[in-house]
Length: 550
Ligand code: ATP
Ligand code: MG
Image (cartoon, rainbow, N blue to C red; front, top):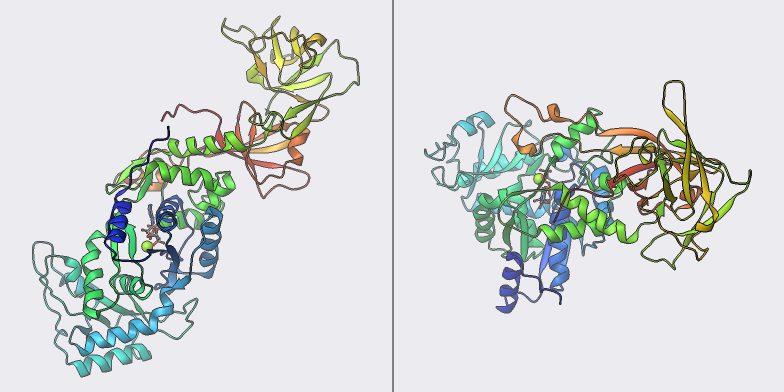
């Protein structure tokens, strides 16, 4: 019997709100700042926001938090949409904080008229110094008691472009001794003579996050504005603006952000990795970005399974990246096509009792979960390649792969016996002379089993491919614990990318490449866009097995 899933705290809140008749329907939003690509942390936020709307028959808006023109770009706007669609979510409305700049400005004038905002000429340093500390109250700005008329005139002049960047700001006039530092006359507007990717040169003053977010939620009638824990100290201010302006009462709720072992998810640092050329781009398969993990072969299904398993908590935790990889394997194990690929530096097998030139084609299922489903054709010939790791000269008793005088089944085909080992001058094994047992053809009806089955490819038919083997990008388990005297870049893993050659069965080249495939007995690999008609490039998604246990 399926265990009924317990509600998370957000579901409890929503159900109580709906039961109390507070709303007919819920509206959530996903509010990315278009200053970078989405990462796995955003996937969690997306799953929560869209997941709740789906569960309760509501809707989710995509709203770009585009109040910082110097850091933002349309490249990011487009990429974010692509990533959300890839995850399989559809937003109700595409909005931008900048759509509301006129309204926000009007509200700012309203606050000035009501004596609740003033223009401050202090420098940022002065403001910081006068803010006080948690223990000590701040000091009022010398400009705090300007008249409404003067404030209005100055604010309009700020808007008209009369002053350079940093010359003035508009602040709310609340309380410089407030125990919550957020209330010590927060900045509402700053001057920034910068071109905006949507509003062009219309504005040279831009609203601050705290002054923008809640009002945008309110305009869109967002019922549940869900964000990460670090915003909990902003919530009272979020409420203050909404109450003071007397507008639609959206509410903010906080959940723990996703942190993953061996992974960094700050956009600023990810941007640095890209700009310094430490990775090949935002979509480098080692990046925790959605475009990176997509290129690596992770699936939306796996990411959703992962988000579902980690749940929604109110306490920050470091999640094991092994759990994410486990979810990827779970999904790919069910759905991926199988192929045999022999690694770099293989050993040649000659079948001495095979008729020279003979080719026998075997049929193998593309996916063992569907033995009667689509098949691939695998050619068997007198000369084959196997992984060097599948042969051992002085093998221990429990070694079930090939050894001198031993037998093994070559997957989908015959049992072969190693009769003779050929070495080069340095003593390296270069060839195994084997015989095959024709009676062991899988369809012969004379099944005989051996302990080991190994994968192989026919030399004549093998295709040389490039395999990009990835490991974690960082060596430190908890990347929030980088010591003071070190930089996060000191923990880059020098072996996060190793390129090897592989020898693939020919059917791999006909695979559509849309989903990662399984290299049998090795791992999952996804076709990379760097592939050309002459050379297939495969990204290792994850290994087949891991020590990770649920
Ligand atoms: P970063 O710190 O990486 O720049 P951010 O919070 O500034 O991230 P935004 O574009 O502002 O990025 O985020 C959009 C939404 O995604 C926000 O609601 C934010 O709280 C959420 N989000 C960002 N990072 C995470 C994370 N690691 N886990 C869960 N949610 C996240
Ligand atoms: Mg942000």
